[in-house]
Amino acid sequence: MASASASSPKRFSYLRSVAPAAALIFLALLLVAGAMATLHRRDSLANDQDTPRKILRDCSNRRRPLPRGVVQDTTDLEMELSLGGDPEHRRKQTAPRKSLLAVPVGIKNKAVVDKLVSKFLDAGGFAVMLFHYDGAVEQWADLEWSGRAVHVAARGQTKWWFAKRFLHPDVVADYEYVFLWDEDIEVDAFDPASYLAVVRREGLEVSQPALDRRSEIHHAITARALLPAADGGGVHRRALDTRCHAGSAAPPCVGWVEMMVPVFSRAAWRCAWGMVQNDLIHGWGLDYRLGYCARGERARSVGVVDSEYVLHRGVPMLSDGGAGAAAASGGRAAVRWRSFKEMQLFDRRWEEAAAEDTSWTDPYAAQPPTAISR
Image 1 (spheres, one colour):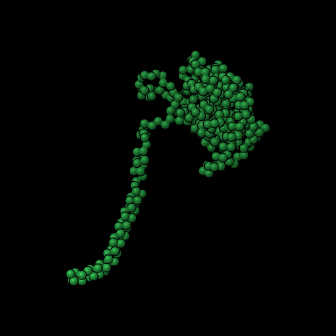
Image 2 (cartoon, helix red, strand yellow):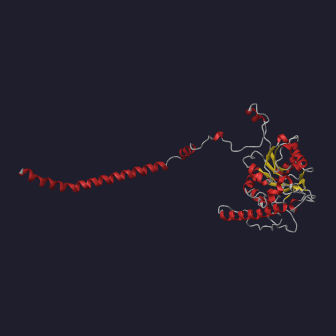
Image 3 (tube, rainbow, N blue to C red):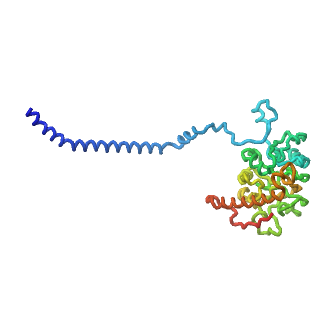
């Protein structure tokens, strides 16, 4: 017993002498383990950063719900002639129409619209879309071409309301030009094919046919030139009147068309459609900005075609008491008041957007605006 008791102090003394060294060894092992974990994490991050871009793209592609080859981003307004047959054969044999005529219509102007649409269809190379603001669709069925037109009906809506909702650029992407016309247009002196020949030759992105001087004319630039310039190619691009002089470089003196009979190239329509505001249904103010859709060349790429001209009858549509529209609109005076307010609102939105978008540069900032009046 005495020897066992004597050995206990020695054992404790030995443990006390070994404990510090053991603690140091344990601490060292912890540090080494931590360093190895850190190095492993850094190696993993380095490997992630060195992953080829192609592999990352492949991973991203796996998140797409559909394979690229089956996705069709655009469409058109062509109608099927039959519910049967071989669709592949039809696609190969049928050439798409080249341009689109879209018109808001009311049944009271059926005779004028008939002449207008017939002129375009007889020229060939056009699809037709009618916006029925009075809801009357069946009453057009007796016209020979009615079955070849696309009919959209919504009571009491305007041309620009329809255009924003049914002429998305991806829907009309197959058409070279979009004619977005009012219905009160007489086309006795107008040939669509000749018009397009002039537009292509002159490189016009935004255009309109000149107005016969018997028309209701609001701006001098839209009137047919009395003495067309010898080298003008049947087109004029500026106006000279009490507001416009030789040095004027802004709309409505230069780079301007009116909204009753505008014609847009495919690219110009994509731009203009984006400017059309969902809640501003009369389109006032857009005409002063259409030059921005002419690929930066409004003095050259916006013009009025004198060689092909139309007569604008100036008949009020939605605000004249027809089709129950007057009850909703409050009459022509109320429509005009709203149109003016819409122009003010659009101008304010434009100015705010231009100020906020620091990445956008105004190509016409150096050109002083012309006083606006309606």
